[in-house]
Image (cartoon, rainbow, N blue to C red):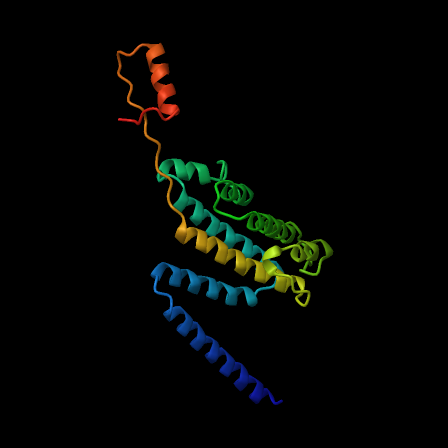
Length: 215
């Protein structure tokens, strides 16, 4: 096949893909979901053009960003406390802690939690080595083979499994983001100023046990 023919075929394929993308997105009525799907689609294309190291670092960063968005939509709305919690020194300041917390409050499945931790480790493997490294590195390849969101196919190499798992996790996190319900702030019980300590403790006990609602 000539170079010219190959270029034409590639161009036709790209045009067909663009047409399919436009058609698929037009069928999504929800604007937020459509924007999210397009962002993931564009990220996938960007990931394909990256080196192994670039793909691993970008995927980890993008998943971390989406996980942060999910948590901020789920948790009580309080800008000051939220900023403190997500600060690098705060309880939700790391990718690992955000993965754990998202799972513990029911936003992620156990398999998603496990795969995100594996991807975090792959990201760190690439980030902490200055010399040449690829997805075919034995330790990295082993982690990629363990990714459940990559499916059961044995035909894919480590990078393909990694990319497939990343796309599946983005869909999982995206679904959780658009369906989650924000937690409401807990109400403070109203305790009269002239109430004795024993009366206050009894009131708090009744409130905690559901015998009375806050006024």
